[in-house]
Image 1 (cartoon, rainbow, N blue to C red):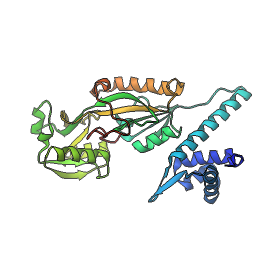
Image 2 (tube, rainbow, N blue to C red):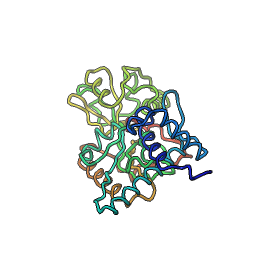
Image 3 (cartoon, one colour):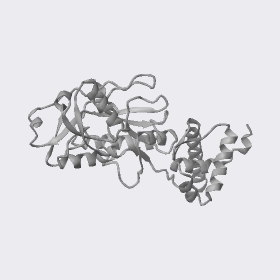
Image 4 (spheres, one colour):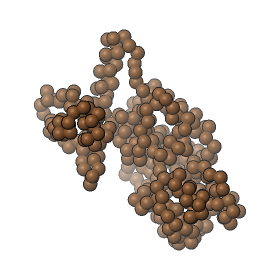
Length: 315
């Protein structure tokens, strides 16, 4: 391997590409042509002798090597910035970056979303990638399997609840079981979503018949359809029912655990520690009822099986 060909320019360009996973948008940010960026990434891949990204249909995804390269490039940029700050006697300008999904931002992290915190919005896979590549200092996600290469700090675990109109007969019960969902018309996410897959698996295992009311993406739209009495919705317990709706815990579905995610060795980093402190304060101020993460069974490491409902919902 000719390491003299490993240019800092190519590394910096690849870090921008890793942010977007789109050559057109990355090239625009770098103020270069798309073919020029393609050449930089291709030559970097050839120098390392490893593919840096894969194409899945029309979507691009980083390989494990690509994640390592992006993390190294960002670390190199941070060290260079700190060095120049020392040379010029200027104050460090690092900004904490948080990655999470729609549900976490809407129902868990409201007090953390403020000026001075850079935000990345994406599903669980994108959140994990943002942490692995160093793009995010901290991520928040629901996990069914604990990653081996990332520190996962338990935050809270929430029960699964059925959201239904205030005047529905099931509201007379303090809590529900899957059997209470028999023959119900349910509002569910699209088929490929983890919440839909896990819910169907649990209902099938319990031999509970049900019908599809409507497919909806995200908790807000599911709650909107429930308000219109289109059907009933199973959501995470951190999602407060709007006026006119009531939530009842389904006691034979396992709790949904949220974790804070960061790279090993960064627990004492002021950016990571500061975000964690703010998140815990935000969780204490939310009206949601959670199950203590210390009393919940933690998800397995990658080699273990996953719980049927532990990955439910838009994290």
